[in-house]
Length: 231
Image (cartoon, rainbow, N blue to C red; front, side, top):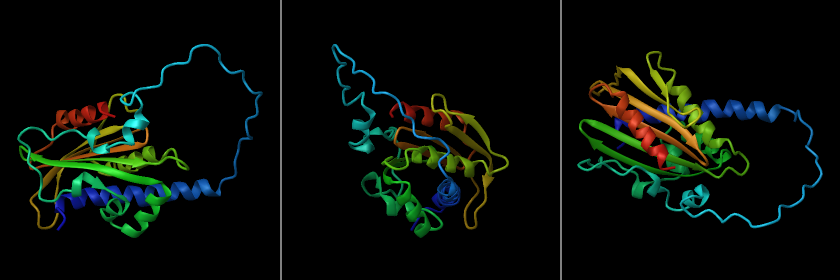
């Protein structure tokens, strides 16, 4: 059985994937190319010593193609693992789609976006529940897919009229959000939420924190900054 609080997160994430990107792709598909192909003479090849290839740690592509779970923040000492956790910390396309309000439509959209996989971690600590997702996209036909995924989820975070937002340093359009008013769901005690969404390279990053008390800015911003430093 799914955690009811996570259902709130899932609904927000799905609406962004299905409603946000579908419209964008339909508009783009209807447009004619506006710019001619660029033609320029072949440039001479550089001579002399060539730079050393990047190490695996420096080359983001090599690092991301490995065990993506190693890029996730580690669970803090004393944190507990929730009853519901994704098997071995992986979420594939069908799993990602199943967290949405319309899995079938979402699966098709994720396929078009070239969704590859997601590494996931969850923990409970001090009355707060933390979920972090790193969603990876192939970027062959749609190089902007990770940024679109992050942008869509930010859009839905901003539909809360009371939400407060701050940019995540060094992430371009990445933002963190604190919802100052508690969420009221049938059958649940009121709970508070904060979230952060950004992208880097072939990854989009999603972080959610739920708690019985308001989530401080230092909590969500600290998680977001530390997670982005690992990418």
